[in-house]
Length: 133
Image 1: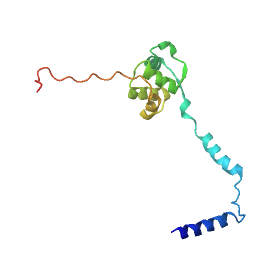
Image 2 (image 1 turned 90 degrees about the vertical axis):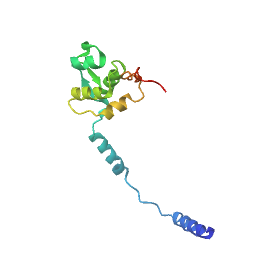
Image 3 (image 1 turned 90 degrees about the horizontal axis):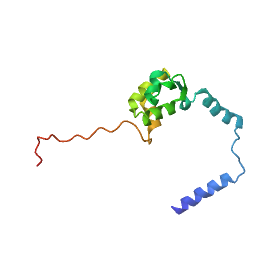
């Protein structure tokens, strides 16, 4: 098997040392394609929301913030940490304020690893009339 490996190595070395260079690709072609694709898609991460009375109360507990423009992620995190809202409720409220569907996954990614959210449901206790065996 070593003999075959040596012949492949020799063939590879001669092909790479024969002075042939790969064809050059103009830099303008490779750089222009990704730049055009990136500018065509708007960046959703920093979308702004304009608060109304219900929206300001939902996330901040303060109706005086109505009329202000805030980043969507800041609104989601405030509703999660300050007002202890659930992710599903936050998704519905952000959808209402944005005027288009905001998925649960967007809210989850904004709140993942952030302390907050609704208090966990209390653990169910066994009925007092049941005998423990």
